[in-house]
Length: 310
Image (tube, one colour):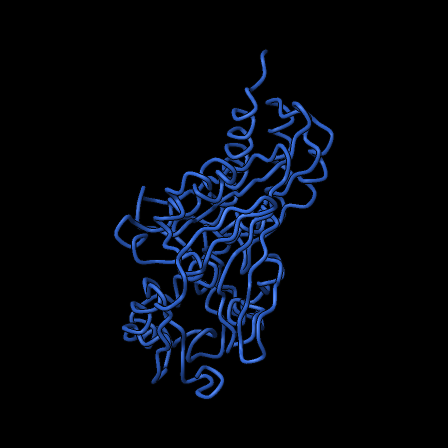
């Protein structure tokens, strides 16, 4: 159906992000393809955990196995939006959630009065008028955590199934932000198990519920005793795609998560983050807060290992 209707059709699962945007006329379509038929199970294997795309965010956040083996993912699913919307929103939908911007996520009348923007109906980015591209930000909570955990998505389309690393699912573009084909559906997420894996997610937002992140940090680390053997740090809401902090990851390898190491790693992780004036609160303050959320995420992992004396 998606291949047949092309750009005039969109998929809908929980609809928690899509329906408000349809009301604001941010999408112009005439066909919705419902995904209620997708399975809603979590399968615990010996080598990995497979989460069907139809699993609700609430179910994922409360699943005992995810909370134990992939604590960061359960945390991320549990802070998306608000409790009623987590009962409807799905893990597949949150992986595919549209990029956001203060100039884009407004009513049609507001956007018309402002002259529209590059993402919809306009010809310039109102955040960066001299830039040829759209700078809307990725605001998914589960995407950076799935990426940090080396997650793999299953995509199903007219040509069959294929797997793609979550890290390859996104583009650094506020408009064409997904690398999947338009007629492909995310049908599952696979999280591989790893020995001595620890993970955590910290989200910063104005209110304790409903709001999208204005900075988020997903951290997954493997440890040998108290020593980090590998680590991935992925940031949310500071770029048009989940942004990996590679320098901080390399810095942590072979080190113990003592307070000074955590502070230095958080400082390195904040450097590639370049928030713009397209989300809630000042982008200068959000830049400073990236270091804080990374430090808090690493601190949670340190606590999971028992912490350190002195």
